[in-house]
Length: 250
Image (cartoon, rainbow, N blue to C red; front, side, top):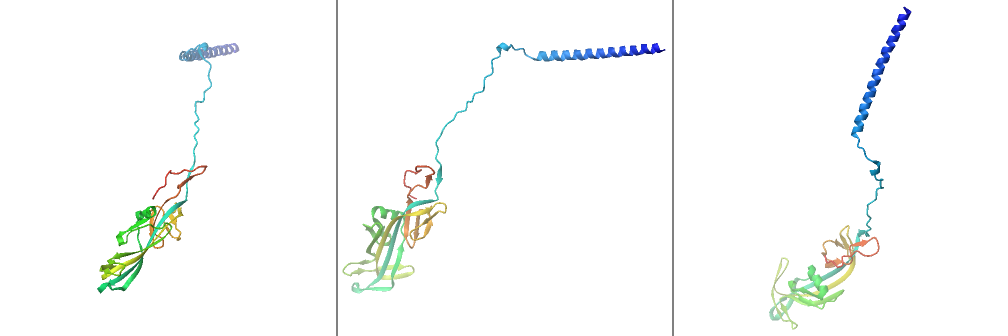
């Protein structure tokens, strides 16, 4: 009995060993198939045909350019041209035998409005056209000074006192048979002031202010004036000037 059992155990071991042997053979076969598949997918290359690797080169190029930083200036000097025309007028009644009497309210004083082109021409050619107010063309003006002349604005009067009358109106007041004469004062000035570009303001000698971008202004103190840029509006942070190569009239 004991011997039977021993024989059965040996038979079982033999069966088990045979099964394990078959399993190992299957694993080996599968591995061989995989290796064969991998080897078929690889390309055979001769090592003699492979060149050595080269280090990558840097193909970037460097361009050197010189630049200058342009900075906008807040304050610039500007050249101002002023033209002030003050008129002191006298209205006289022209009676019989050219007898003249000053009428009620016949004396007046006012500032005549001057256009920008008139003011510029007055400084360039030293003459001003006041024909619109009856003053004619006044020449040989004093630059940076005052020129005073007398003129007959309406009617006629000569050095002998003779007169010819006409109708004349000042506002809503109508005058008949009158002669209008005037003492005209023309004051021309040019100077350099400071303009605040950021705030668009120009400060005048009279401490008044006006818009910079307009280029022309009229007030009761300095009367009509126009201005031009005296220097460039921009400057460089380094040496040199960034100018516009010309003077710009506004």
